[in-house]
Length: 405
Image 1 (cartoon, rainbow, N blue to C red):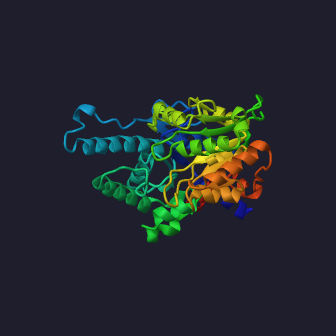
Image 2 (cartoon, rainbow, N blue to C red; image 1 turned 120 degrees about the vertical axis):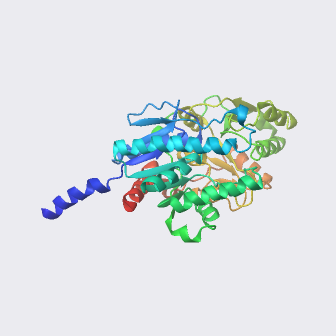
Image 3 (tube, one colour; image 1 turned 60 degrees about the horizontal axis):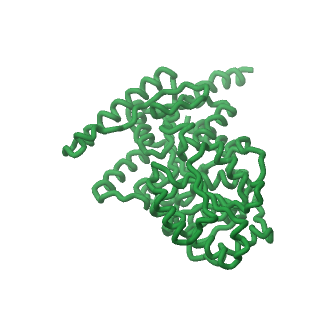
């Protein structure tokens, strides 16, 4: 009895009381918001009731304490004044840090979980760690200093490295979504390597609709998500054009949907996509669909016969798009176009679906032809897929919270 009573007294002290710094939340259609929208309901199911701090104006309909943080918007009139941006950033971080300290004290919180991107959340978490000594877990979905999408100047890169180092050293635990991402970032920090763990992106089976594939007789190939200069649809168009050259009868059967390919934050225009469409003479099969809600994107996944993920053609890409995990959860065949040894290729190969490099045009054509004619169907490795279920990833994360407390 004494032992049981003692455990009862100790448990509340070690119970994670978490400030979740996720600057984007539902209903915003951005990867961070979509991921946190899957994670937090499962935290509640597993007994964790976080307090959430996100950007002002993002009104998520969830019954939890929520606080709004201002967005960093320096005055454009003074943007060219030397030193102005640094001064504006200093006051911004002073402001948001003060807000978060009040939140932590009000709710007697004992842990900060910062969910990036954007990296402002991780920098804010590091400041709270320094000010309060509170336990701090940082999360990296993408590389920061090592991000090949970045076009920063050498001076900006040095500053980013300094900021990244500050976050790495302040973190009690660092979470990465793939081994390749962890290896890329942490090779610069051998002394902190032991504090890093891999908890992958997740899918939530309960969110998928029951509806089946398209009912109009079309073989629908869908790509969901924004395009960038370095990651655009041209390689997919090359594959589709070659497929139709070889099997002309498929031109009346195939429809390729690009859902949310034109997106303001990515900056890849509709004009650029349509120019490529005309170049490859695919006007009859390509369909552009505006960005949709996450719930609608899951519905569109279920209606498709094949889902496409395209990585930028970077050597051994560390990026594992969260959407490819959602693709997997939809139980539809996946075509991955990705560099050799990338995180996406590793995932798809273990899952049992098609993963090809940019120069494997012939193999991709055969893969799609076999799917379209019913000659073959990928067999999903369920045991591998189950570890990406939000129930499993949340359990790992909550266990981590409990360990460091």
